[in-house]
Image (cartoon, rainbow, N blue to C red; front, side, top):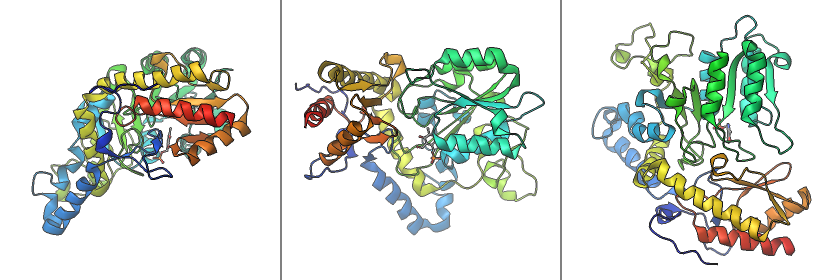
Length: 415
Ligand SMILES: Cc1ncc(COP(=O)(O)O)c(C=O)c1O
């Protein structure tokens, strides 16, 4: 079946990206925007422009020209704030995700008396768990007692209701809930407004890991009232390996006076260069910055965000994403239902770009299929114990590619 592309169809920005080549030299079927997004063609120019400014201007580049480095970390902040549903002063770009998670927990995990537990999902991305365990230990707490991991049900999904029940029963012992926007292995999208409501009711701080949500699904961080959120920019934000990450701090903490790990870039910019001994934080999220931002790795992020704006923002892309991933789900159910199980919930509001697939024949059959797909130029990924993740991305993947994937799976599973 050939699907006709229109201007607003998924993949309309494909020629604005460099898609890695497959074995025969043709474009690969690149379905890993949930891992490392494809490279915008403007990324190299954006980096080179800063390299050139460095050569031409040297230190003066900090102050001169249309994009002085002193202001560079704010260049695309309005687009980013819109992507996550935040106000400009609630968002900052800095560091990498796990570092930002630590910085946030340093300020917002404040165990006191019996309220000292952290709640997260069982099966969270390991880095989050390592960070949480080390924070508990830092406070002299015992992760065996003070870390609660909510288990998925038999369908391997997490249910918002289970977190609500937990908080209803034990909320007075919980200091922090750390929750994902989208679960990395299953692709399940959570009702973050509902989770925020449950936390608020229990008087619990809510932090979000949005690694798999930002640039994938619309977010409304300000409105739902999350306390903080962190994300990376190398997945759906297409900003390159280990790109500069992002961080949200709700405006209710604009004049935060609690503990934080400080550095000169978080100091009030009007007196920063007076080089005084006492730290006076910037108001809002920028007050958590520590070091000068890395200009060369920020440049691709801003180049990439321009494409999001040009595409009409996350609402427009979400529409295309629902069509694209819906088409994949539909085709799998139509042609492969007896051999492939879709782990991701299929209701539109509970899935983003990614579908997590299981071969009904079990782990070995799944791994074999994954390797065969790889040999044919399909780039998706494998997550133990038995998941193939495929994430068609509306900026650069097309409905035709989805059809090709299903045809290939059909052929290779029978081989
Ligand atoms: C859900 C999630 N959290 C955290 C991380 C860790 O990110 P980083 O290496 O940027 O700290 C990742 C990385 O892929 C992730 O998927």
